[in-house]
Image (cartoon, rainbow, N blue to C red; front, side):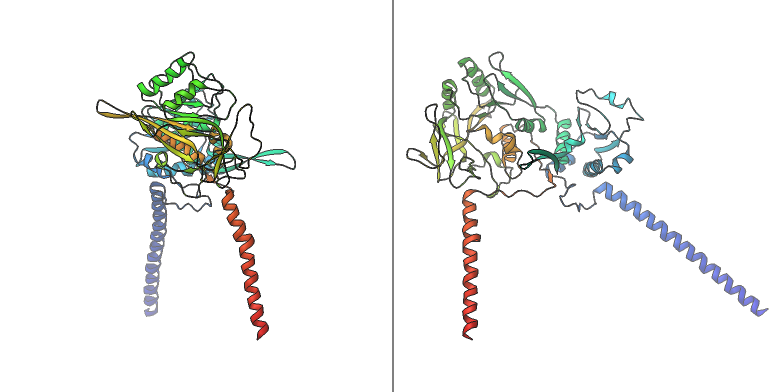
Length: 493
């Protein structure tokens, strides 16, 4: 009997210990589940995921972060796919991750929704647009307006040319989703969208990539032919794209009325050309700019050729919000030189923005005199030479200062597709920053794409010479000399 009682007590203890163990296991598992759920919630809510991608794909720019934190109205990003389809596609999964990070920074103002238009085919009828709305489209919407983007808009596409076969191929070279989504966010939340007018009618030239800067920063881009219409007072900026024929005095009066009376702003390009434009030349001199029939060349600050000049940024007025280092290159090939007629006169001021080096020179050209050599010759104008000048008219209207800014360039090539499409050059950043300065009522959105590829190192002529003498000549000679010294010491032991 004693044995049976003892066995019974042991069984009860085992049952008690076993029950406690089971309860502890259940509590432990439940705690793990709850902790995991809590961590998942906090990760999504407060953006605690680490971006370990090589290119920093999900890194959000400071500009975007400021917009998200200052949202005053709800913004919704619709992805026209099911959530499962989004997660199973690499491209959409990357975009989705970035949008989730937007949501985590917006204090609940920015949300992401998935819409399977196969199951909800009438959804797209809520959006009237000329753009194609199809499966996989992105729609960013606020109570004001909406903007549509496609997956290809989120990636930077580059072209590779094979000299051997003569064939070209395209590839994804960068992830530009933050630029695209931030631009859309800016578009749907801005109260009044500005307009930029490109002047046409005199064979003006406008690169698509340059106009894309305005469109990505939510300007309406329109054409104006001054022979038939005036410039509306509400236009934020006009562009004059290197006309090859002269303007009439009536057209120039319309430009002057817009700039002086309406306090507009303008960007002016001029190229080397054979046709004279005396009316425009005289008007430009009123703003202090005298274009010369000379092309700037630089023996030191140039890339691959003296005509591919890389002028120095001698005034940072346009680039206060743009960090520019000594290694950044703004390329301005085939530039005409320009003189400043005055620095200050009657409320108008002018300042050089881009200027060539002291070793530069300019060659005269005309229909009778063609440029036959890039070497410096007798009669060439010595540098430094202006290739970009900012002119400002300041007036006080009702005790408020009103500034009219006109930015003159000596070449339209500074804003060409090839210059703006090369990541090694700072042209895109520089022009975006300049546009932002010219129209302070609009905050430009300039965010670099996350590069998938290695960036090509561009060096100028003077840098190439230093590298040659140091690495190719001096360093080998030093190594040979040290080797000779060691050999002599060992021989004499």
